[in-house]
Image (cartoon, rainbow over the protein chains, first blue to last red):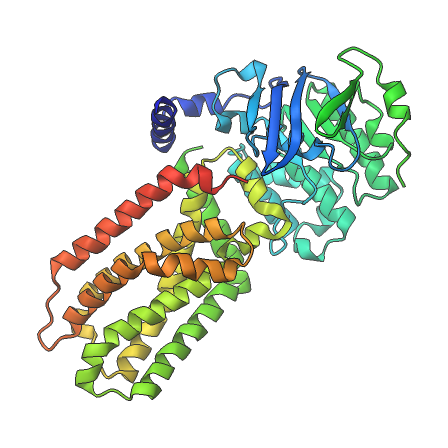
Length: 260
Length: 224
């Protein structure tokens, strides 16, 4: 009953655009970590996550490893506030008590799907998301993002005319357009050629240097894991191994097969 | 971000995408025209019969067209999981739903406004003297159809056989709205037109109740 009342109050506040707006306009460059506390997720009788406890500190670059069905995507979606845990909690220590909307402003995600509109041009897609994130000078941000992902010449072309690799570059640009503090990547190298993977590696290294927390799931070893500071192995919805914050992830990463 | 600004951005995106592809508008309009023309061939009504049956036929055409249009309204969001991108954005679930509702309202209203003169000609009914009151009834009725329909389309979008599920869920719920809209329209097409305020109040109340319900349920509707 109390949570319903709080939810109603939150909606009223949001509709009226009260002081929460000020909280939402915090700079997105602030640091943000994420903590999964005994998190479980069940889809009917299937348990995707079984009691995962994992604290990712602000500024870490974590590689999530594990076979298909290990729970990597579910964990990333949970961090992105897209999926609610069946039990346990997901916390953002730097934003304790903040609303989901405020937290979402600081999160960027590249998922399996590109989350782009095929019937809109590359520039229109980026401009739309820049406006949704309420960024200053959205046109300039969209142009800069297109430049950064190497697609300025295709700005006016519809996304449906793009190759898989170009869509993936655009999806990465979309995820980065609001300079998120927490970047969630679900196999971001999928569909990218060697040049694209090198661009991705450079981009991630740059974001990491800027203080962005990165949580990336990957199946294969490629240039993009060069800056990884921690590796976590999931299996059957549980954390099987963790190199730990400040530990050496190299032995775990070396066990990952080379991509391609 | 304030809800009205997010709604405006989402509505702009919907309108741009639709006016570029014209998929929803064209199919809805053609379908509604076919229904009205077929009814007129099937019944060949006199002027008196048109005044009696016309409002019912008109609203059934609106309802079927609405159902046809609402079904794929979430299809754009499902391609490439774009809905997930919207759910990740710092906007409320209600803003997301409201953007869809307003876009569907605009599209269905355009189809209805094109259909209305065709109906008047085919069924030999005079609508000009009562046009403003008729538009009020159409606005209120259409709003009810799209609010309810968009909520059910969001529900059905993640289900298998969603094309069949939406009319099965939606049409029974819209029965009271259909009755009120038909009665209000019939009272306007009478020899002595007079709009009974009971029906317009009922339609407005229907809209408010379902809009409030969608506001309360939107977060669950948009959950994965």
